[in-house]
Length: 458
Image (cartoon, rainbow, N blue to C red; front, side):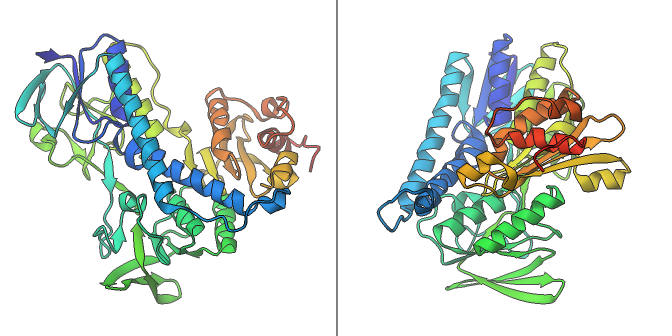
């Protein structure tokens, strides 16, 4: 049997590619060794958000009195139920992928696969022939030198999402999305949390103002934050783990029952036969052209296996572009300068485009509008006044170049600003757009008005 396309992996890149390829008339198969949906649906985006929703309900219950609502005293987390709900949500989403594959007649082949060369894929004990191959095998947790994971004392995100008990103390190495979200999760469950970040600010990829507010918020809540800190070694014992941390002040030792290593991910490209097939890679990441074809004709790649940001929505966008170009469609390039990023702790963080410090480094003159939620009527009524909207406009043409939001519902507001950047919207366009009142999203209009000197509320 000859396939038009065989996809290795069923995560956001894999399932997006499979469904779209089938819609375009390709005879498509997906080779997957685990549950459908990859890390995102099973051990990443979806289950973490389910965990954090439980925490949101818990914290709201604890603060009900401040909203004039009397609840029975002692709202407490039911850890087993929280974890169970998270797993059920993941399973439900995985079944959704199965439904889509059945609907669009995508064949699923369960098992471990590898590339034998152009047009040939090994699936366990079978050899499959295909016109095209797409590598979409995603990524796995990075292992930090000196503090490698063992699944017990030093854990990665998978173990962190299914705890059997709440540790009294936990140290989190790394403050990207994974580290920040899980640090907030464990803090809300009652753990004493220490975040250790190698860079000079929390959430290093975010705007400095956003990072500063998050740091203040976490410290106020009782989370210890260490920046410009490097973990040199980890000494495991029966009682837990002692980390030797190098800081600007000298060497410090952090004791914790459990250590979460959240230092990023590495691509799943080993043992796939890629090097043997002649696929060019750098540091285990696959190099592709603008059509997502590798150095070997007929072999493509998308998602976390590429040297692009490891984001589920970007993986889907890459896969969509890849498959549609396979079919000969004239579609635009993926705009890597306009890809949003989100962190779902409290306060939430969402951003896209240019940061203020990037503008300074590049010598780009900008105008900035920053609207605090302390001035928002909706934020006041909701009791969620922490945070702000910060918009960055290119001073030369007044077009929106960057957007940074920290606060309640930030992740729901960023999508419209991604569209605004793509459509080259200007500051006055946003300032004159009528937003509904009262909403958190009014902060976008107010920030734009501040940038062009037209704000009436500050």
